[in-house]
Image 1 (cartoon, rainbow, N blue to C red):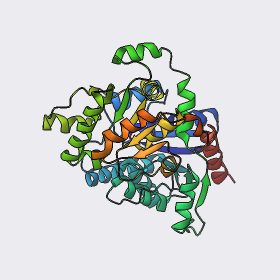
Image 2: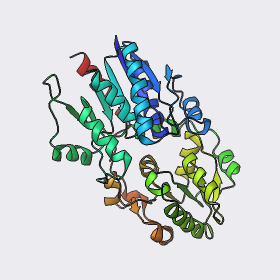
Image 3: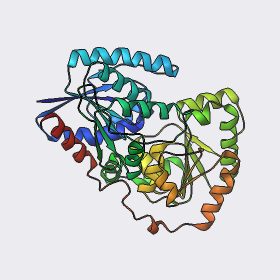
Length: 369
């Protein structure tokens, strides 16, 4: 029996874990022990995802959230280490680039437990981003590195991967595609009543802009967040703008008390609602790595309010445009006016929708050669 401990804590990780957990459950010789760090903890950011995505209830919930990066990562490391000592897994599986990712990888590596990193090799080359630090260190600690794109593979190659591990074996690098594409395909078919979703939010399909803003680089400086929202308010004068509020963004807005025009703020939404809102938007504005990809999956143009992105291939093919706050409204209006031809985005950049099975098979091959 293979024992896998999966560490998750944030919305994108719940989505990815849902795809892999479904495959784990289909293979009777694998037991998955699910650890939720608590990084995203409220019902709108956590509970609804477990329910809608049919993820098993976590075996451990560490309840760690709303702390500074150092305090959060340190406490996660301490508690995760104790879980791993109790469970004694054959491998630890981590996703993405959050504090939960790094804490899980560190705890496992210090206990000499192999680490599998899903979404390895991504780089924004901006070390001001905490996510960049997390992903670089996690790659260094990992035994199996699962890359979603050719760009990720090249990033690792340029950094001298694969490295030699403590047991004198080499890291194993696999290009598998993006497991979020698996999820997008699978769960899009589970949306039962799209009309009710749009009625709930007072929207007309194809005639609104969906926005999500939560990254530290856009929210730690109130002036930058206010500039972004001012641009979205200009857009909202011409077309409805709906923005599910991340708790971090909401807290800053409540403190600043600045006018935001006609932007429609709503509470965080579940994954099925989010898929429907993404799929039928005229355009998406985001700073989320996951939402950038989901926009492409659904062939919706995207504007990313960041200086750079780890998903560079989307920018290269024109599916995603980077924009600073001062150019955001102009960029959005330009895209809405041009109405790009979505059919040109036909390259299967992120795999074939069978990524989770490839990852699980690679884990099996490593643990049971």
